[in-house]
Length: 302
Ligand code: 13P
Ligand code: SF4
Image (cartoon, rainbow, N blue to C red; front, side, top):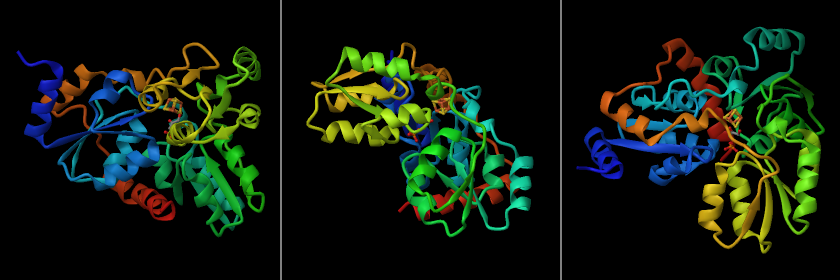
């Protein structure tokens, strides 16, 4: 009788499949994935992998991005209900309104957004490359969708641009409070505070370091310090501990967890590979329009 690990290995070989996973998925997924990373790394990998079938262990915007970059390949999202609420927190109507109002505007779309929103944007960004990309945009006005917190963080670093904000956010990162971080710091005074820019500006201001999930992992791995308060989703602890078994990590709150990312299970991956479903399907006209801003990101972030 094959165990899950052997079964996955066989299915991957039979289907010529590769498994990509985000750092917020459950530890069991990060253990079996071929590549684990942040949103930017996963976009690059999705563009470069040679396999015919790509299993994206993450939320639906990640599956859509993989499909946009590989329209002819089979892209499997093991749970089709795994969705990022923030990805829906902007509207095409508002984009059109802003484009009408401002002549010289770039619509900058955080990759945590639906393919439809991407299709109406000029360039995508992730938290790992947003600063570099926004700095290199020639337009004076930047309409940054959907995340107001990331937009705020970038706007402070690029004061020469005029930012138009959108009222979206990640309910998980946005829920971290100043008191929670302060209390954790009081308990562990030697710990450095590391913050994902999806957190509110007051939390970002408290950070000794602010960056994407992979930025946080890199910072810890290169640091001489031993203790860290991690202000991002708890899934990142798996890689942090793997790379830094002797360092200590504290979360500012209990259940700092993205329920949608945790919907992905090994059993669902196996079923997806066996049945070829659930697949990510996108209409051709969306693919045609939404590919360009994603490609622009990969070019500008280099
Ligand atoms: P990263 O791009 O830092 O991995 O973040 C993705 C995400 O969903 C944050 O909530
Ligand atoms: Fe979306 Fe927040 Fe989950 Fe990231 S952590 S996928 S932004 S809900």
